[in-house]
Image (cartoon, rainbow over all chains, first blue to last red; front, side, top):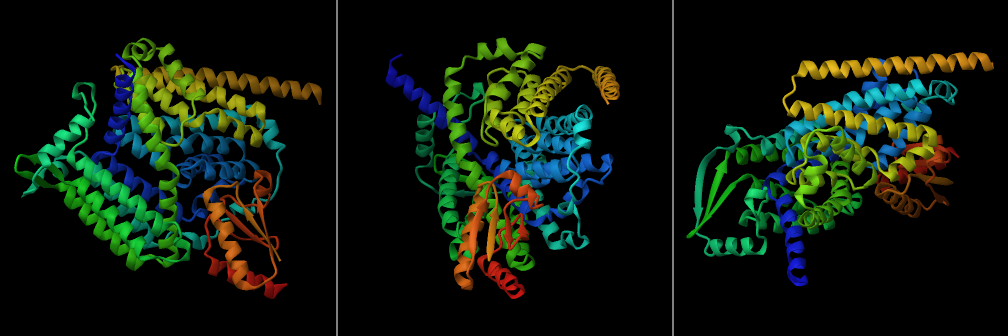
Length: 489
Length: 82
């Protein structure tokens, strides 16, 4: 193979991957997810969660509250770090702070929805539940190991956590958030009611056939390898996305100086894009057949309700904050995601499936460790871990090691370890890294053996034995520390 | 008057800084605006969510971006007290 043709195949790999990620089913999950994240940030009063994270809160309240704060309040590291520092220094202490730190990047709404949409709902659920259990577990362990330094920690007032009771969410804001979730479900659920077609219209668009053939030549794909090509619908959607980008930049960037016509044009285009993604399209010789699916009507209904709530029921400040936060997420995450997906597509052409299969093709300890180690040493921007996991999956990685990788990657990167170390100290940070690596490996093994068909009872037994051994070990350590402390006092 | 913008340098902090600059110009009050970027100093103000806005040592907003018009009102309130 000469250099030009191999470069060409790399380029086609990148483009093909990008096109597949901008296809209809991904848009229907990702676009609503960005708006849900924006609405959560702008419309949920922070005090409703943070008042459970004060120094006086009992453990059975503060740990679950820390996970709630992680999934609801924090999507990007620029909110995770201040909240983490605040919980640690002024609030509930090291344990809940660690729980929050572990849970926030792995199980926030964007990460979960995207994992579910791209890889499968089973993996999203596993990621959520195992992060929940292990996040609280690691928090408790860290609090136990470093109990003495935690008690000695500054006992400053926790004014920041004092909750005012008038801060509950008002009804319209809650309804708005719920309709957004409904929009996401209408777009992504694969049930007959939604995927079935109820009306069909044939549009005489000449040349659709040739356009589709052109697209297939531009981005050749192999359905057997799980690759997706670009459909005519996909091409229209990509065009619409570019238009949304341009109009949003004009309409959202200076939204603090007031709404302009561009703001509403951009929102209209978002609605149009979602509707285009929701219909089924079938190109044929004479033109284009459009299938109005249940999905289409669901999305239409949700969009109408959202438009009405936004215009008539939310205050101007809420409208502005909601649009700004959503746009900020898109601006911050989407470009990196596009670049990441393209690079993943290029890399995929180079990696041989045999390598992955040899390393992590089965649910072994070695395979799970490989997943975790890759996750620790690689740093990928928010959400890019998902397409990477998808690539590994299609190259033959077992779902167990895949989960181990997905648990370890967002929590641990050299960058986040260094930030954490400046807040809680180097020793605590590395102990935390050790526990995350251990628990991620374990999570992969557990989930992997479930995928392989081991009964739930046996898994629970193994997990129980492990936890008993762990608790006994920790208890012994804390006893010894106490004895030492008494001896030195 | 002393105005501080708290935040580690993310998009929202920069936006708040710009809004605060606009507000100071509109209010006509003599004021200095400083950025506070060290996490230690931010946490010391007792806020949990960045960006934070502090006028004469008092936290007036956190976790959101008040518009320039809103900040002008805050500046006027603080000026009336001083």
